[in-house]
Length: 284
Image (cartoon, rainbow, N blue to C red):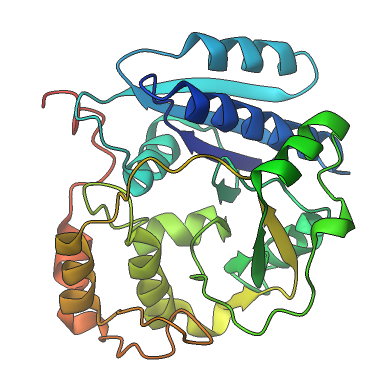
């Protein structure tokens, strides 16, 4: 039995059939990337919706024959997607006794270098590892080519000459020592999608700055339609006011112009927040 829990949150939007198609096909490429690893994961797909999506259930049933996958549902009547809440609920309510967490988005297949990152958590050298420095965002044509060839590591798509790193440490995929992460307080929930990764960056920076590592790898982000922006102005203002994190365009890194605040500004609300409440969005 693997001691690694690979958690993937997902929301299938039935109103947009094209987006649903790509979300599910992208998740399939993640399953294929898991099959290409030399280590097994316990994969937890956590869906937020009123009920489990039939297409998603069918895909998982197909791959459960060769992968250890569990499909859980958090009932959400709000129509919103809360990434931080989904991760927290999965850790608290759905996973087993795994000691290492991989928390990843449904559009980022795993690179084979993931094993080296996991080893750095296992040997306690680091508590948190971001397995990439840069994400190459693929076009619709490139993504469809991957679907056709099942070639997720096609180097033709990779641009090694990037000059900026506009990605947060905690966004996309994060590997963590579970005991440390739970003791720290897990994700800060900001009632929706967007900003939760920047907040976690500040928290990890304050508590475990010398125990975090960013790998020098490139990942690919599979294309999918974007229907709307989830990150509201009010949420970003909250991130700036309480955590001192404000992204400025054309910076070389996500936090280049930030003035991160120490824990005395946010520790109380972080520690006292009621996290991982399965009824948070169900009663709305």
